[in-house]
Structure formats: C-alpha cells, structure tokens
Length: 258
Image 1: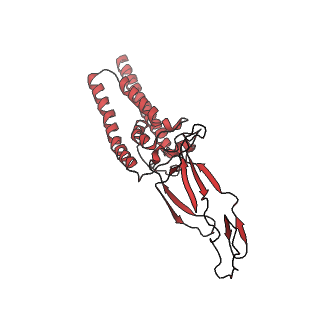
Image 2 (image 1 turned 90 degrees about the vertical axis):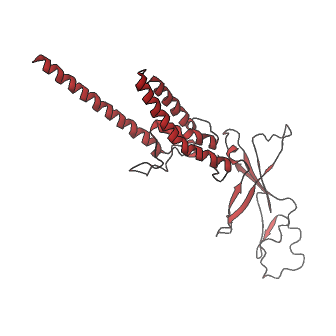
Image 3 (image 1 turned 30 degrees about the vertical axis):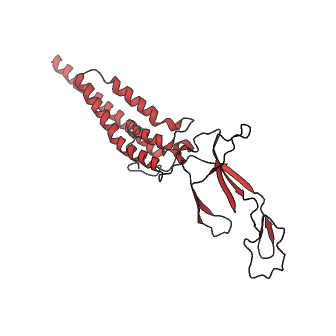
C-alpha cells in the first residue's frame, strides 16, 4: 500500500543525487484499537550513522504507492454493492456507505539519533565500554601511585582527568557523536566520579534530563548529581584534613611556649 524509504543528507536534486534508500526490514507490531493508529518497527542497515547532523537531517518518507488499487480496502462485505459502484475511486477508502479520500499522499519526518543495540557494531562497542570502565579506573590509580612514588607532583594526573572530563561531556555541546563511538568514550565519566548507572539513595532524577542532547547519551540529572555530591564530599574531606593539621599545628606551638 505504501512506499517506505529514507534519504540521507547527501540527497540533492540539483546535483542529481536522488537516491532513495530502502529499509532493511519493516514490520507492523500493533494495528491499534482506534482503527487509526498503527505501531511499527524499522531496521536500518547502519543505524548508528543516522540522525547525527542537526541543521540538515536524514529523513524518512512514507508515500502512497502509485497505481495501487485502494478501492477494495475496508469494504463492508455484508453490503450488496451494485456492479461498477467502486469504479474510478483511486486512492479512496470505502466504508459502509461513505467514501473517504486521504488528504495527504506523502509524508516525511526527521530521523532522530538512533541507538540500535541489536546491531553487531553497537553490541561490540558496548562490550568495550563496559570493560573500559575498569581499565580507566586502573589507569588513574596506577598513575597516581607512580607519581607519588617518583615524587614528581600530581599535575600529569590532573591534566589526564581534565581531558577525560572534556571528552565525557562532549554530548552537552551543540553537536552529536556517533552513538557507538561515544560508548567507547563514556568510561571517562569515572573521572567525574559518575560510577553508578542508578544514583544511590535517590533514583528519582535518573529519568530527568536538561535537554535532548543529554537524553541522547543518558546523562541524566541523577548521574550529574553523582558528580556534584562527590565533589562536595571531597571538599568536606579536604576541609577536615586542613582543620586537623591546623589543630595539630596549634598544639605544637602551645607546647613550645611552655
């Protein structure tokens, strides 16, 4: 009944590039109880390459197929239609006694950023991401131990963590990363002490996001709050350490005076 296809950002009528890409698979999952809405799933060959650009987007098109005979759809077979009653009614749906013509014979919409975890490429990158969490943690602590042992200062460690923070929060900026590529970078979030998928003690903000860029990569307010509370905790620890050393220094001065 319909032609369903998509066009990428290189589609250009003037330059002669008019390629319509077919879907890998299309299936209807639910026809809906209201007889007006259907639910369906679509499979793209390389879903991780779609929806990356903001100003110029890949688009999905659904067109009524030219030459398709629509007159025999949804006919009330209990009604005795006279011969020839449905002739000349192209692109028309027929119900009991009323004929309906579709207002729109073609429609399109922007293809959003896609995360298809059934895709082989994205499955592999997610596996790498899960393993990289432990690798990144090991690198940070190993470098900390080596710098303390060599007594050369912690500046290289702070620079490493700073770059990891910039990479981890790249989706916040006004551009998008290929989904599976960001999954390889996402372990850098441990440098912000964002360690848990679900925020401990309070999960109410794990499904709340500042805007669409944050939601595309699951940087929820709950996860960002982990970094906030971790920084507050580190600040409290530093203040306590300074207070302890200050009190120790005051006690030393008092002993010297006696």
